[in-house]
Image (cartoon, rainbow, N blue to C red; front, side):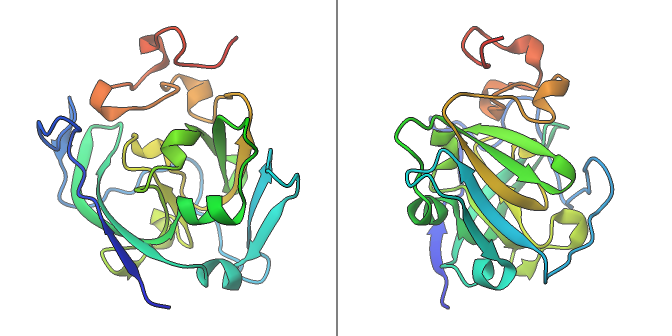
Length: 212
């Protein structure tokens, strides 16, 4: 299946530059993650969407079905909370908008939880998840992801710090209220906007996180 191009080398919305506050340029791509690299088992691997779907049903694709979905390419910068930024990576994969069309959320959905191997999770606002630049990446710069970088698929949400895009992602849960994910429960900012330098939970303003 041919690829469509969605070229979005994203700068700050006011055009002021491509490095968020406190970030520095990174030439390579460091390997950073919590826990071991999971072993990919193609026969048992699946991807699910569940929770508050419009139909009330759970959606599931096996690996062959998932990789056969319509593909797109997004060119976007990658901002890690550890203060490095990679400019202009080309992420190939399945756009979040494609999955939203195939598995629509209920009207009352406000957030999603991305679930990955070993129960790792990251919460995103639905608006960020539905952004045209959000992609379930299988490739970077034309090459398949390595296992250390999230093969077979990782979520990339370029408008947020990279921890909001889990490696080895396996499911999306539609939620009608916000809930903190793995790192958000351990002191990271609930929203994770690099342009506002939202790194840690002590920086949160009222309304930035779920109600206690």
